Length: 140
Image 1 (cartoon, helix red, strand yellow):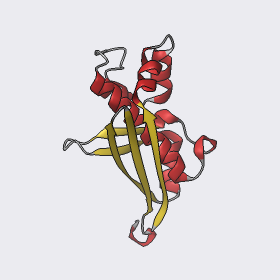
Image 2 (image 1 turned 60 degrees about the vertical axis):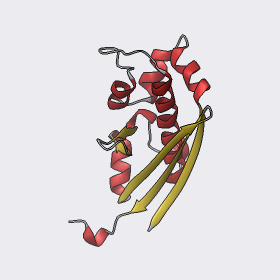
Image 3 (image 1 turned 45 degrees about the vertical axis):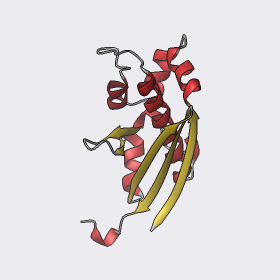
Image 4 (image 1 turned 180 degrees about the vertical axis):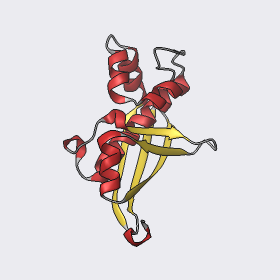
């Protein structure tokens, strides 16, 4: 059964400004989880140039976090930290959520799985999140 649906848009130029501004490193640590930072080249141990593709991916990842919060129906008022909501790419290239901390506990408590789709074009990135309840009779 569907628990919630959320979508969000993020302007790619705005994400670029956030990542390259004077507080870009702090923004990256606060918003993106460790695996996301590594994939985006934001890991201070292994930095990479911020290419247009990486910036668009960062904007899509940010939109994924906002879409999740909308689907959860709580916004940041819930037990969530943005860096605990990661949008990663599977080997196939498909996006998938990975949760940690209180967010992972909340997902487990509510018996939910999350589905994610991302896109970017024309200076905008978008994400859609679908939260589905897991049949509790299937959980052992």
